[in-house]
Length: 222
Image (cartoon, rainbow, N blue to C red; front, side):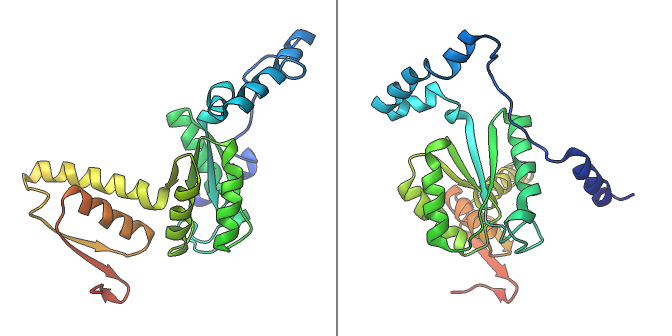
């Protein structure tokens, strides 16, 4: 049985790769009063007086929203938000397993840029960070830019910045092995989508001076 069939069977078995569990025990009336009403009114008013306290008095500081519209899921293309859910759950599982960050998948049923930006902004008060995932180019660039302008929490587009960071790390280590300077090399980037453009920008900032970008039509010269 190949890995895809095994994965499908496992997903039927798992019925989801993430879950929510309480961080506090509620066994007595006092426990209930501390975690919920009436005691919970005190941290509510503390946050009302200083919104930054939400990062100290709730889980917000460790909670990331993994958000997609399902338009560029892996190599599958525009398969829709519901079909993108297994990937978003998988990303959330990685956040928890490798960084102990609590991540929550959100799959939005719209391709409209204005609707996406507004919806994500309205949700941002519940999270400490936004991870944009599998949103097709070129829309992803505008969505990320606009969210960074209005949100007061980090906005990270994994397909752009995550890929660029990995490529940069590989290049830096590779140059150490071959003993070459980053500003002396010639570089070809095969692909000019969200990842390719972000990689080019990041490598230019690191000092690469000679980059040729290629898309499916050939070398990009304008």
